[in-house]
Length: 296
Ligand code: SAH
Image (cartoon, rainbow, N blue to C red):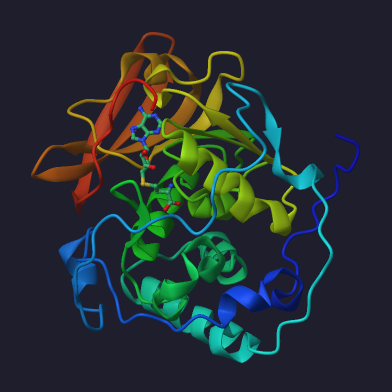
């Protein structure tokens, strides 16, 4: 990759596909899937499972190959309907996230600059700034903004003053959280086990030209030994326990934040305090899609 500079965020006008915006928004909100605390903020709820992803898979299979989202170029396109997804709407979403207790200004700033509506299918973009998870296809969801912010805030509250050289996300989904992470860490690695979602994340991130995200297709339960160790690891899917290989890929002083459980899930913070020593604490209830082994 030749272009190392961060060009993010681009103005919305440079990244919104005007053709996509012409579609009629459907009135849809996924049932709340994060904290009960956040449920108060959801306006109108209806179900529609398993929507198709916005983008079909592109560019063929890359297997475990390194993907550098920032290396790709786009031709900026004007967007006459940008006010509908204006900064003000996103700022209001971030204000609600802050009201729920997220205090880390760097995280709140990251949430303000990442255009979440570009990570949901066009028919749902009117819902993009409601504090709720939304379907992204394949029975998966884009995480609720509050929980994205909360997990990153917890990961940043390390003994190193929030410095994060390299972080790993398990469960790329549509790529939204990876984009937020790119604003708080030097290097972001993200793994997805469902190939079409890996491809969806690539196409969602491509126009944003974020230079410090590397997307991998694979089983995140195995981590990414070739890029380890990580100062921070975030799991966007819930297992019954944190996989051992991930614990071993943390730096000493590193923090891992993961939902743990089945029907009843809790957010767990694990800190590596020594070569063979980890501490763990339970933070709050949450609800995520399941962590599954293998790839599809
Ligand atoms: N990070 C996303 C959330 C995606 S939902 C966001 O920004 O909103 C969680 C994702 O975890 C799903 O796409 C699911 O396919 C993925 N997942 C589940 N188990 C996994 C595993 N073992 N390895 C990698 N991804 C996994």
